[in-house]
Image 1 (cartoon, rainbow, N blue to C red):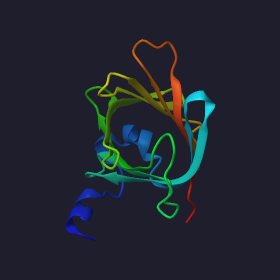
Image 2: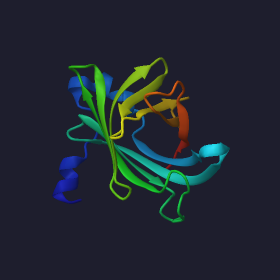
Image 3: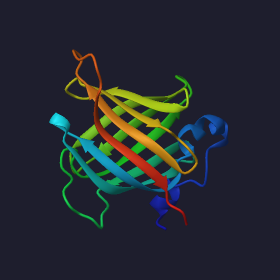
Length: 173
């Protein structure tokens, strides 16, 4: 392991906020996913993907990598485009919430959100550069699976529109 990788990765949550860090820490590990992109007029496209979560920055943050479609499949994914990006999730005790940054450099997609528990779910909300509202939710969370919803709406719209959904299952060793 390089010095950079050794300094980036952590073995577990930082003790200072260990309980709060488990909101996303419970996802640490490797996941197989089925991704459904929802387009206009009811069109849908489905592709397999991988998601990998890990502790970083002295256990003060959770970072993930989303790869859609899987690198082995390599085909272009209609509607949502191919994802090869990373999320950095940092717990901020001053607001009792998570500051979230998503980076997908190949598609030049960059998002900032605030994440909080909402009942049994986790909801992340933000705004795009164009002023569109975003809501990304982890639902139906269990030890070995979760359902993720990527929704958006314009400031003038009444309802959220589902853009992407992900059904993930923990990869067994």
